[in-house]
Length: 71
Image (tube, rainbow, N blue to C red; front, side, top):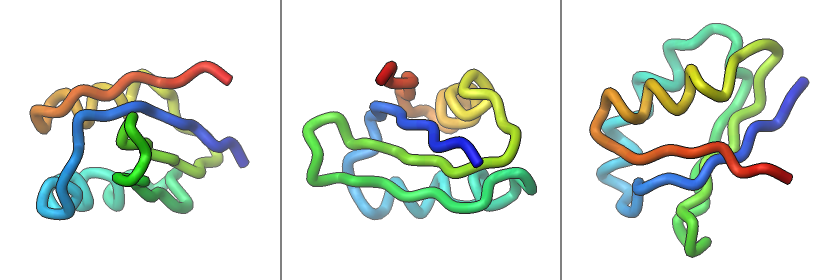
C-alpha cells in the first residue's frame, strides 16, 4: 500500500462532497481523507496502484488545485 499526500484548494466540507464520487470510483483507492485544518488542505490517498498525476488530474478536472507533496 502506498500513501500519497497532496496539497489542495479544497477548503470546505461541501467541496469534499463534490470530489467524493471521483475518489470512491477509483477501484485501486483503498481509503482517502482530507485534513481541512491543515494550512495546505491535505488530501491523503491510500492505494495499491494509482499514479499521483492521476489524482491531481481528477481534482483539476473538478476545478480544484492539487499537487503531490514530496516527503
